Length: 428
Image (tube, rainbow, N blue to C red; front, side, top):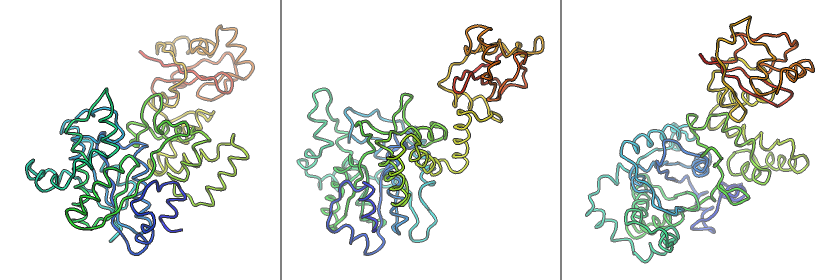
């Protein structure tokens, strides 16, 4: 398949400015394509994956990608898809966020691929040179206000009774549109890609280039990453799923994809991975015959964790998952254990209980952890082979636990039966 045919099969071609001619245009010669990312945080999130991976797909197909970090547009905030005004970021916050995004993008794009090398730029470098009057004179005069008012991103906000649209956010479209003109001038960039909520901004840039330079540019959008129930993917009860290991650990990232609903996993395999069509269709068939095996979810989690966090991140995520399902625990620290067992009960006891009278009895430990109501219950659990410390079975009710039985600096993991876990934390 051609690149565009593959994008269509994967459900990634939501809208184009030239459905009939874009495929042939892309196939005629290598093109330069860009996508923009506003630095509203110091990390990209799952919602950013689609346009970022689109750039990656274009590069792998022989085109040249440009990633634009919006140091200037980020100072204003894109009103697209937002029901209210964004909070403005400080210059220090913006600079930190730009640096964070720049580092992350280097994992996805090849910046040393000869004439197909990716380029990373910051739009503050060219927009920041304008004075207010110069921008109005040179750029603003090319924008018909009636056309701007007709854009969905603007009209939807103006029609709301509970919030309006400031002149600041109204101006965002002009800045992003000028990005396209500048990138055409500087790099010969002729195609902009982005999420479907960017359609108005993309077509505004195409129109501005036609008015200012008399050239024909192109646009392509991908759908937003939406679940079958209509909610946004990448949101959990604890917050956003980030691409940064500091905000979302490789284990949490892996677990998010392992738990994707059956109704969504086929779409995610197509849109977010580079797996070939025959493998994806084979996984679809396996899911239809045995959804409980969750083969699709495991393959998705492996591919994306490897891509985002590398081999070491995937290994750590797999190890943490194995531990939760019974693998022996060793070599972890407090933070890692608390993260793995974030949803299980925990209790704190004094550290000296591990030292007195030869240590803490397994019976007392199970009661203290809440895994047994009484000592009699605890004895019965151990005698029936259901008592575990750090996923190691305890054979005798006379076992006493010492500091050598800690799984990390202060944590001991206790288990009753196959899946009933609790943590004991030993503090001074």
